[in-house]
Image 1: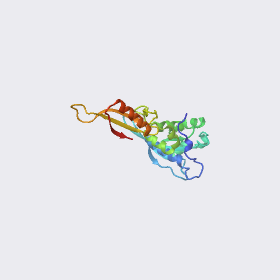
Image 2: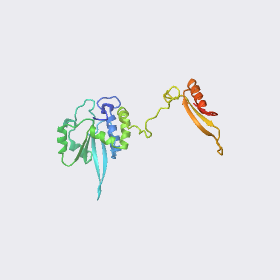
Image 3: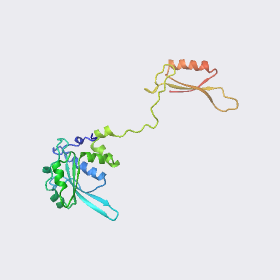
Image 4: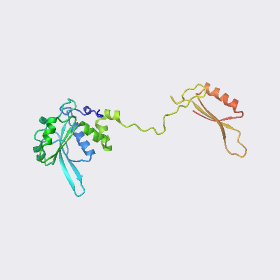
Length: 239
């Protein structure tokens, strides 16, 4: 099941002022994945290229730079696949833009017909990224998580990793009189008791402590401590 809801990105076919959001998302995603932005998205006639990115490939003997013509198709709101009719003249567009490859960046799936069409194009490289492959790359990258937070706020809230509890579950602190959990909500009082200093020792000699609710519970527990700790002195009360 997909983790990211691509319908969080506004439609590209409605003039709402945010119709460029998917192209901007494509730019931020590709940049987070290590591509260099050669040509940014723009409105108006674009000659069949939404943006152009560069990829640096490092081999054991040499480095190669590939320029990709990126075509963005955001059909998540309708749910339809990207067909050959949506991607006309692929080779001509790549060559006219001075690029080496065609990169389809889609919020749905490419149809089988489109995969067959572009897969056999001579003289160019072809890569089609659907919503699942985009999601996988984003969630597998630290920089990708920043993009997810910006463009998929609801999805990120649902899937964001929770901080680990290094100390285990919080144990209750209960009143020694009535048993109430003094942490839910935080309340009560902590009392520290001192006895007579032992011979040869300097400072306070702590002999008892108790946690109780304030008021009647504290009075009852104090009476019990005094009964079993003759001569005990209430040293400190916090709460």
